Image (cartoon, rainbow, N blue to C red; front, side, top):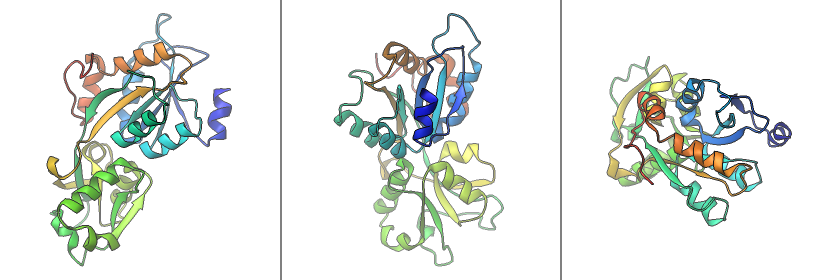
Length: 257
């Protein structure tokens, strides 16, 4: 039944089972979380005492928000942006008290590693020879943060004609790495995960809203207790190390009780 619902929404879900279960938890997560989440899931040894298996669906946070509003059977939502969780909370879709901050990230400017352009500042985006800059579309949190940086530096108007909006931060990273654009805005973790990128500038923290990843259990979860346990497990020490290794900033044992 889950497969049928996923197919109806056009989802391409990657299953990461930690124990056989007829009803896996469906975790909808920002695509920038894909590598560490899959690593954590793969590190869990099969056990008859383990909780439900976990099935992931990765996309931009904005796309996931819309799919949840349209009735996608999600148990846990992990977002790269506060706005998407706020919208779901306002719509009454989140289980009260389940929201939890997990990780943080940095926004960076990247160019293709094979580019002859060795340095490029944010101010340098105004240079006429720089013709195309990939950026997340308005539904992508990384795109929001990038537009805030441009606005804070007074660059929005001059850079706007060069912007190439794409549907996820990973799509931006790939476009830059493959040389389809001159530069792009991505998270530090994506610059680390995708080969063929060179970081040329790091956005100052005060130039954009804090980049904080948070998660919550959906009110319609089929197994809210297991969903809350999974969310709590991401704040435990065994899970924190893979995220740290992939470039995320990880707080102490837990930012919430």
